[in-house]
Length: 149
Image 1 (cartoon, rainbow, N blue to C red):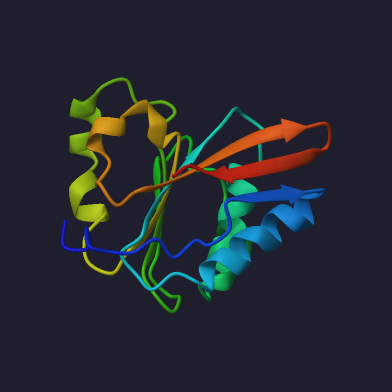
Image 2 (cartoon, helix red, strand yellow):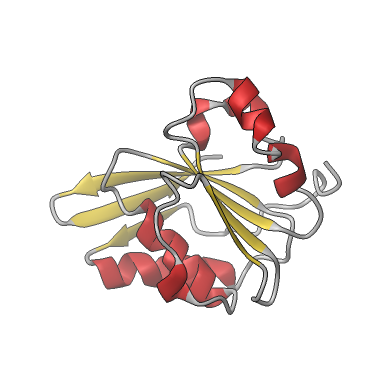
């Protein structure tokens, strides 16, 4: 990967988001720190706020956040119209690394593209070494997002 040298642009190690709006805001704030080429693995149970967070990322990158939806059935959504190219992937329905390769996974993560990968922990061996892991969990109606070192 060309961007394996990237330093970690995420200074925050944990967010506590009391609402959907705060989860989206956390994604928007993170987008302001990204320089291009970052890969984010978004991990956690269904309903934990991963797609909402990605909507905030898209907004912060200058994409139309209202167009962001869970890519569970289409697997990949590309948003080339922002400040930096952005791709949103969902690996939930994939069963094997062969299916991942058929998506053109490596090509999607090249260059200055920022990638947000829901369920990235399904295929950790396929993720580039500079991947930043964000783990989502639920605490009542609130969401916790923790960056793993």
